[in-house]
Length: 472
Image (cartoon, rainbow, N blue to C red; front, side, top):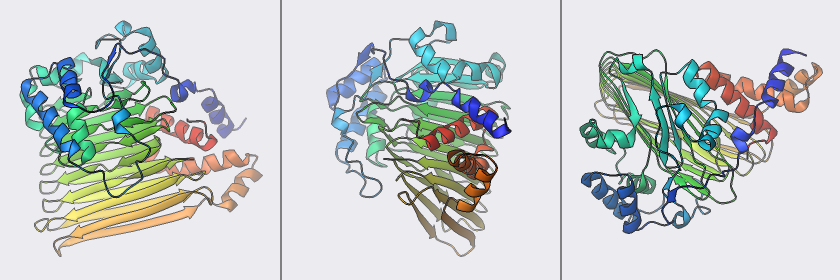
């Protein structure tokens, strides 16, 4: 057996229930579908919100009702938000010990590798099931450095309440777009991270989000503050089982990177193909700071995801590396945005997309250079690989340059899988499917090498399963 066959056998042995598992747990409590002030008040009571948050939710609901759907992008005709359940509380409280998590929830996350990851390579782990965080833990030596890693509700009502109030939905205001307003009204769960000045974590933190309820939405909020000269690598994983009705993911991620600090934010999203993934992510970077995005988008019926970086301070930096895989019935509209505000700022956007069996992959980028952002540099590169004649790939770059002292570049490549390469690999004993899978894995290699080893393996497994059409 050659090395490729050995790897293929290992992949075939992966428990595919982690991708296809049907949700079975009956929730302890859920609100009715629809969006009314009464429902928002109910969610607010369940969350024990302070008064300012309850008022914030109600005002966000008003904004949501007065904001139209986006007039561009993929169709959302199959999404009836009035029939989405916006809050589902699982039959569990948040636990600090994995042994105390209910077996049915624990079994789901164990198949996703959460406990094993915590024991081996992570500084801390959070796990959310439907609308609530069911597990959160951080290593003692990490907490001893002053690092705070907890769920958003604990931060909102505890000793970090002032920090939350100061930063919550300031980067992503409810007026930003309709789904930001929806998030502001019904958000639940998520993670709060605070890294003190000068602290550099050499091992990552991770949060994992599992939406298990049928016809429901998940609206977690992640807020990360990395102080001066600190460093953090944060990993986010997402998944959901397959149902025959629409589910919705409209989370929000707000990242604050202080002077000289550096934050790497890695994401592997493996939603089921009945999911509408309408997530919003945004970072602001102060003088000499850096934000690095690594993103892998798989699954979901429709995806709209464009992480944005605001390079506010002089010499701030941004890098975005991403990959998407659109299969049959999928329309993935992804990319990145960057705003150069400070002088001598730099950004690099590098993406790859794969489309198969009629899938549609659209790349959008937006580069803005402010009048005072002299000496800025930006590079945008996107490569698209179509595996058949039914699939589609589009590239839609936008650039708004407001001064003549900037160095901006863009390149795009769209192509099909090489028949010669397939023939060569088949002449070496591989089947046609395995040859295609190997070529696609090679195409994705620049992205997978940016991930920690265990997550690179997971991404390669997802690509192999997508190539076989095994993910629902």
